[in-house]
Structures are given as structure tokens and as C-alpha cells.
Length: 466
Ligand code: ADP
Picture 1: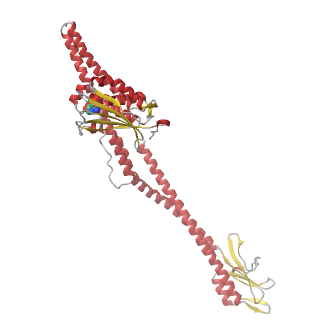
Picture 2: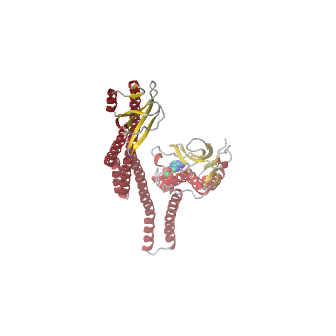
Picture 3: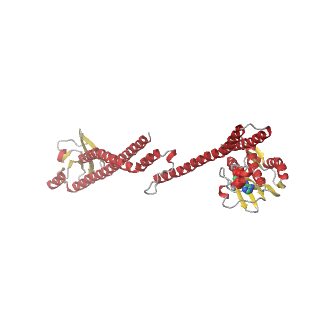
């Protein structure tokens, strides 16, 4: 199908080349014809006027009768000129050449005009007055040379146009073949690429032209496809792995419980452990669903007031924070009306994940978590920035670039202890992106971390006020 399209393109290129060349040839020939015609016509006029002037000075007048000397007659005949010599009563006194036996055509003195003396017999005549004798002369030449020029042009076009069409077809085919060869190669290579050999690239060599750019863009698209395929593969493997562990534990506990008759107390202990594993799996599945939902486009948009949303979340977490002697507070914001347009439930999930982490990773002992909303400017995200700063252990710089990757735990041993699967931050980042924002993190090991959520202001009252 694609090959056919390339062939059609080649045929179109060839046809265009032929058409352009033929039109160009016809135009140039036409131009040459017009110029040559003008030159020839002017030359004929010159011959007529020159001959008339020559005759006017040579005509003899004897007894009222006009005559032309034999020498001049010869010269004019050799020039292809014919003449009627008329006296003052317009009676023919003498003729030269083919005008013998023909009556003189009616023509005003001083004018040049074309006449048809017979079928296909076109001539140009000039009527001049003879000042001394009172008579006049009509000088004429045949227009045969103009007809011959026309014939030569028609013949030349008849031969040249098919020849040019033939040559342009051959040249067009050759050039189109050369120009489209890389595209044919790209098509063939693109056909070979499937999900199982996504690492193959076109890697087109040659000069840096439009086709090279096309191939490079295609390769870059393959890079992106490959990395997203690999990410999906990794994600599926990680998700399976995360589910397999609690499932194997559950299976082992069930087998153990069924292996002997047990007393009620032992059974309750065993079932309670199984319940914990089921809870872990439920949390994981809920997180996977949340991630899938966060990576889809937003389906609801409503104005969300950030201050109110964060106050509610802080209230929900207050008991846990108090229990751990952590002060959790939203800094009094001088800016009123921090409103963004989005999904309140999703935004609550985003901030809950960050607040939950902040409390979770402060560890044992007291600490504080400060939440602050401020207007943000700049090209990337003009709206609101919410920072969540904790006084926890912080994150080592080498972990920071991967923090938002799915299933990534900066400190697996500690994180597993806290029950996280490494999905909280990727869900938060996905929700921020869903709202056309993003999250950044900075951390000082030993002093704490600051997560900043940049969300763009939207319609109406959402614009930040200074
Ligand atoms: P988890 O479910 O393991 O908490 P997250 O995606 O929420 O997964 O976080 C990824 C990792 O980032 C965590 O395992 C933790 O090591 C680190 N982390 C996240 N928030 C903080 C924080 N406020 N302080 C220190 N480390 C953090």
C-alpha cells in the first residue's frame, strides 16, 4: 500500500517535470517566434522604403511618360521587389517583376499594407509619391519569408516537444528515483520494526536534508516508544512482584493453618496475619488503580480552593501527627483565593500522599511539617506553589532523580517497614501532570525535605493576586 503511494508520488513527479518542461519549451519558442517575426517584418518595411527612395531618384520623365532605368530594374528584381510606376493620373507607366499585367492595388500615399493577391499569395506594399514628376510608385515584396518562418517553428515544435517530453520523462524518473530512494528505505525499515525489535533504528546516513530529518524524527519517536514500552514492562514486572510476595505469604499461612488442628487462639493469630497481607495487597491494588486513573486525562474539573483542601487534610492527619509529637500546620497565607480548576478528589490524593510521607519519614521522635501556599510566576507554571517541608532525615542526593519512578524506594528496608510500595510519589506526580503542573523536591540529608507542588491557575478568579 505504502509502496504504491511512493510509486504514485514518483509518477506525479515525472508528470510534473514533463508538463513544466513542455510548457517552458512552448513559451520560449513562442517568445522567439514573436521576436523573429518583428525583426523580419521590420526588415521587409526597410526594403520597401529603401527601394522606393532609390526609385524616386532614378525615375526618368520623357514627354510626360515615366520610365525606370534598366540598371535599377535589375537591382530591384534581384532584391525580390516588384513595382508599379504610376503617373499623376494613376495610369501605369511601367512595372518591375510580377506586377506586370496586374492592376495597381488601391493604397493611400505614404502607407504600408499587406494584401492578398491570390490564394496563399500574400504581399506587403508601400505607396510613395514622386515629388518631381507628380506621379507615384507602389513597391511590393512577397510575405513568403514570414510563412516559411512559421512553418519552421511549427516543425521545430513538432520535433522538440515530444523529444523534450521523452527526455524529461527519463530525467524525471531518474531524479524521482534518487530522491525517493531513502523514503523507500525508510518504509522498508519501518515495516521491519515490531514491539520485539524496538531497539532497531533507521540511522539514515547521507546529507542532512529533509529526508534525513524525517528519518531522525522517526528514530527519536522510536526512542520514546521504546522507553515507554520498557517502562510498561518494568511496571508489570514490579507490580507482579509486589503482589506475589504477600500472596506467597498468605498461601504459606493458609497451608500452615490447615496442616494441623489448631486451638482458637492460634487460629485467630494466624488469620490476623493473613488479614494484614490482604490489607497490603488491597492497598497495592488501590494504588495501582489510583495510578491508572492519574495517568488518564481529567474527567471532571471544578474550582478547588487550596487553603480549604489542605486544612481538611491536615485535620484528618492531626491525630497521627500528635501521636508522634509532630507539629503539622498550614502557614497563614496572606493570599486569599488560591483557587485552581481540577479534580478535588485527585488533588486531595496528591497532597495526602505528600503529607503522609512527610509524617512517615520524620521517623521516631518529634519534628514538624510546614505547609505553605504562595503564588508562582514564570513561563512554566503561573499559578500556585504549595510547599510541604518536613524536618525528617532527608533524602540522599543520589536517590533524588529516581524518587518519582514507580515502585522506587529510596531506602527499601525502611520503606518496607513503613508499608509503602514506592507508588505514592509517582501517583502524586501523575496527578500534578494531569493538572498541567509538576512536583519538585529538594532535600538536605539530616535536615529534612521540601516537596513543592506547582499548579497552574485557571479560569476566572483562579489568577493569583499579589
Ligand atoms: P512509599 O510508598 O515507599 O512511601 P513513595 O513513592 O511515596 O513510596 O516514596 C518513594 C520513596 O521516597 C520512599 O520510599 C522514601 O524513601 C522517599 N521519600 C518520600 N517522601 C519522603 C520524605 N518526606 N522524606 C524522606 N524520604 C521520602
